[in-house]
Image 1: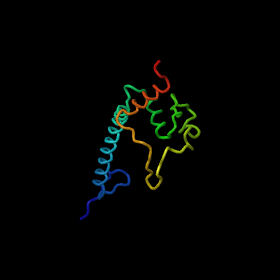
Image 2 (image 1 turned 120 degrees about the vertical axis):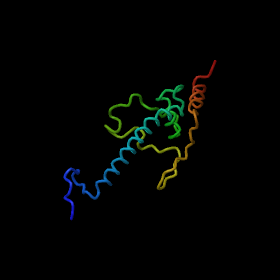
Image 3 (image 1 turned 90 degrees about the horizontal axis):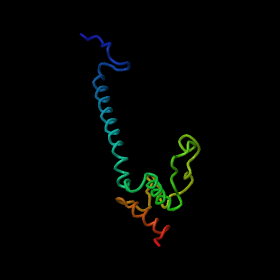
Length: 134
């Protein structure tokens, strides 16, 4: 004798797949929670890696852009204008090529890797060049 179908199941869920749907939902909640936690810790640790207490966020951004585009004149705008992406037109570096890239299925940047707090050394070196001590 067959049992009557349950009526308290969510729409589109059969009694045979109800447990599977519950398991998938729980896994999705766990992964979403893990991504939120990872994102919350990534930015502060990345800023500290590049030299945040000594350099401002704008100086870190400009330093990374200088290395990426191999152009010491590139500067990050602070605050970013409302006409910047994603709200307005294309960004200021849209048609600019990076210093050296190897293009393929997975592009590989060939510009130098920034090591722990190396932007501080680069920033101080540039300051000494621009404003030599008298």
